Length: 448
Ligand SMILES: [Zn+2]
Image (cartoon, rainbow, N blue to C red; front, side, top):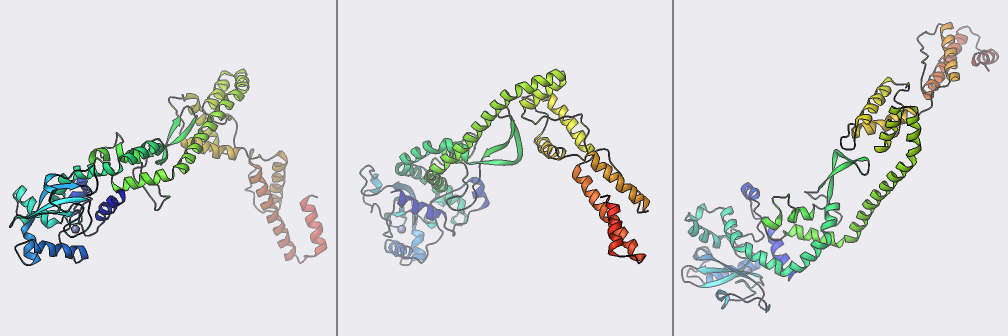
């Protein structure tokens, strides 16, 4: 039954010969049973045309079709369903079949306004021309002034209750089972992360990305990312939730619910991983508190401020640093000084430092944890500086008081190479380029 329903309704909804106006879209018009303006040349269309002509006074379709209008009566059901009793107006009708002979589920009554003959067509054949007459009479407008939207609205009013009723009849139990099964997981899994907004999580003592229910799906196939099902169906913040705007889920939502349910095991696994990450984090925090007690006590022995800072660093899980130490880069010094102040003035309710500060701290810590140049390194640099001056190679070499070892060593290497080249040039010019001389010369220079 549900399959039959889907085929009829969904196929109609995706037909491309229906033009929705912008107004329709804004209105949220979403008609599954979409009437076409004209009958086509397909097998069932041809059959219907023939039947309409046979039951009309006119002897050709173009004139005959104007004799017909939709009455507004409609009924859903199968002829062999004992739970569905057809209404009186269906008594003499071909239940389960359209006038064209096609098997149908939704029945629409039509009437020949010339000879009074009444018949039924299915949702595939409740064509617009039958409705145009009805709309024209009901609203007192010329048939030519009847718009697509008026047709849709006329139909929507008549079929909404019917489809709603039929949908729940066919899928109600399954819907409730699936919804109960997936709603909690949906709220945790069908979410999207804000690209840069973060919030401070007191309990986990870290910035965490702000997440929202996903309002729009993306991707294709079974692995695609779904828009939140709860959001679409009945989320209290959604002013256009389907439970109110439609009463039954649209085809896409229903399909997504089934897909989500089919992949339930994967989703449970994902959810458990998320939960595990949080449990691990809580365990880490617990250990951090226990292992930091000694260190905090030690800091308090040094000074009230040092103790408080140690405490704050644990409270916000920030690696402790010395904000007064001399650093290679002045910028790093200032950053640490400023961050120290921010950490000292933060409370779990009011965090003054930012996610950006935390990223930057990581970067700065990595930098300042590099080994510094030793006295030997600096002595060697000074020695090269002297040779430079003696050889008139320039005097603008600065020997810093504090520097990273890697920087100084690079500079030493570079200067050594330049001195070697200078000596080589000198020898070439004096015509003294000889392996013996050269060897002696270099040996002296290299101080070995
Ligand atoms: Zn039909």
